Structure formats: C-alpha cells, structure tokens
Image (tube, rainbow, N blue to C red; front, side, top):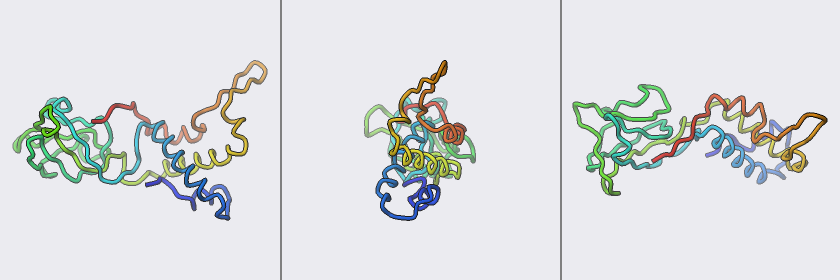
Length: 191
C-alpha cells in the first residue's frame, strides 16, 4: 500500500499528462521507504503474522519491539487461542501498541525456545491502519523532491563549498524532516 498516489503527486507538481506516471509510481515507493527509514516506522499495513519466544515476555507482558495498530488473533506458545477480550494492550486504548498483557485470571503467555512453541500475533504491524495526513503530505513532498532532482541530480547530492560555509545535502528535505520528526523513534529489532 502506498501513502499517496500519482494523482496527488501530479496535482502537487502541476502535471497533467501521463508520460511520467511509471516514474512517479516508482518515486512514491522510494519516498515512502525513505520516510519509513527516517522514522523507524511503517504507517499502514495489511495483516501479517509475527512470532515471539519466551525472551520477549517480561513481567507478564509480551513486548513487540515495533508498532501494532490492530490485532486479529493471538495464539499462545502451547497452541491455545487467546481471545482479544482477554488481552490488555500496552498502552491501553491508544495505538500504536508496543506490548500485550493477558488478563491474569485467564492465564499467562507461554512460549518455548523452539519454532513450534512460539507465541503468534496476527495483526496490522504498523503505526496506523492508514497513513496520517502529515505523513501523506510528506510523502507527496518527498516524491516531488525526487522527481525534480532527476533534472539536476548532480547538484542535490554533493557537498557545496561557498566561502567559509559548507553546505551538505540532507537525506530528506528540511520541511519533510519537520513533518515526520514527531513520528521518529529509536529503531529496535522486531521479533
């Protein structure tokens, strides 16, 4: 899934033809990847499955090491399905989630060290089900930046010396960095 589309980028750039549609589509993918890498997050996703071992459980909490915005199912390491109503999200009632706790009256997370004994969580592993408006705009802006850079790529990615000043290129334009900085997190490994 893309955070934006050709129509929005072409509107921003003032383009009307379809001659650069394939290029713009490719640049949207690059821009989205750059924003994800800068923030350490993904901003929308389809259901996916992640697996966790006993090392991921501490004090009764299953820690993800990444964002989860919706839960489809949870299966304990012993193969028991855990109903979503028996789970407390961490944080409570606010996404993205970074951990789960089972209602202690129901049980506890159990997992071994073998592949067959893993805790399985199926859900949308992303910051949100769809990209927030400022992430969409940052993606449009970043795509436009990359599109325009194709004309003068040699000048946008090299250090420039002007008198006593040194100007170094940014990985992301300053306005894009400002828009996405609030979402940046320390990148941690996911299970």
